[in-house]
Length: 113
Image 1 (cartoon, helix red, strand yellow):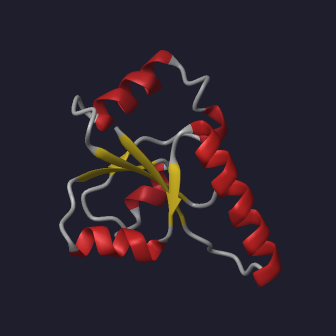
Image 2 (tube, helix red, strand yellow):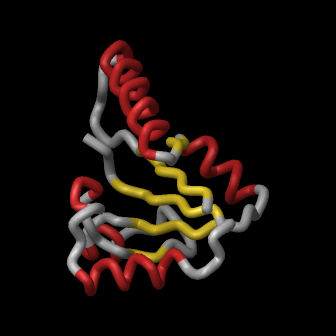
Image 3 (cartoon, helix red, strand yellow):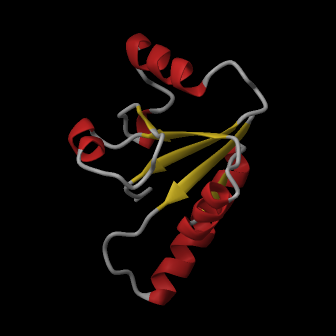
């Protein structure tokens, strides 16, 4: 299973701070077995009609008023809670990811900060 995480910056970040933050996030991703992509790469994947599942983990009210990610599935949770999700939320996440262990899965959140 290929797991990617998409990061979108909504607030201004100084270039130096963004670079340090991104490098730290990439190291963490590598250690935890996933990788980060940016909006340009996600756009490329959409354009190429790549097989993927997008899980939008923002709160429901944010997801309902957004058209950013066509075809995305909403499973709201905070990334820091991923190892302690209650059984209902785990089941919802497992169902959203599907059975295909080779499918690319992209988690979208407002920010990892």
